[in-house]
Length: 473
Image 1 (cartoon, rainbow, N blue to C red):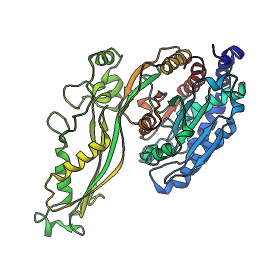
Image 2 (image 1 turned 30 degrees about the vertical axis):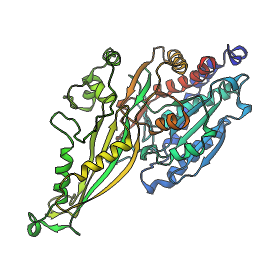
Image 3 (image 1 turned 135 degrees about the horizontal axis):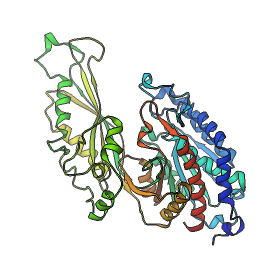
């Protein structure tokens, strides 16, 4: 038995009791955090992003952590470590936890579709509404409140903890990998804990053991030196908007497969056992996926189910097309350039850099009618799979069963958390991905929200997870 368990057996219960008795204070702190407009993708919000870093650092200081805010070539990184005086007897021998999260948020646009202003958080119908409520400020605060509950009750933590909170996750985490490499020794740990994923449903917590990778491009075709009168020049030269839509449309064949040569070569084969496990999950594609967003018909690569497309297969999406006249009414111009935002979600075993080169090569295979490409790679992250059979997962399952009363679901996720691959490749660490959001939280959309009962569940789960890791990580 762990020495901590012998000396203070009721500490986990006391921490949960503290969280239950101080819920309103935790919500108040979250609301303060959500007022900060930490939009990392827009330079106009750079000072607000810095405010977000300072807020996180201040709260970690209050908990008793030793905190440093590091400047990067982009936005600041907050790094906090447990001082020796904050560790309970025996904690030094327990697994060292590295918690990761991000304080930056997506742009709030379109503003007019929000019921209340995106940075004036409001609690209504049992949920808190604001940009970042679920992704990821609310989930970061779950862990911060769990640390607070332990230190307020006993003044000690049962395991050594390092907290790493970045400000660039929503714009590709381009400066985080260099930071991790530079501070490798200071980030030494046994397991990473991340809350930036979703629950299976509003009663069932998910432990995520796989994430797809991400590749994001802005591609432009440039033609004439200025916009032209289409009556004078229409039909006598290549229109960049026409050419780019013609080319981008060729990315997909009639079976909705991506046509880039070699694109699927390295995709991991889904085993019969894993396919059967997914089939056994309580998942209804209409009720749980399509219906809530007003879609009746599933669509995607032929021969695969919705879960297989989301978790085991790669995808490509045109995220936006722009160029020429975009205002009200008519203006007959041939635009000087046109562009498209193109992203790829990559399946296990695919390499982001390899796919990036293949995509750029594919673009150059096509006739552009004399227009020239301007290609910008906005970031890449490899897919990652983590072990679902480890003492850390077992500890998480025990904590989740205690906090929610239900067994956790083991699942994969179609989204991307770039740093998970960096933790594996640079630090050699697996990650426990335990999230408390839902797909219905309107993440990246107007009226993003986070249910308060799930916020409280997240706080309790992390408090119990620290105890379970100490006992049997």
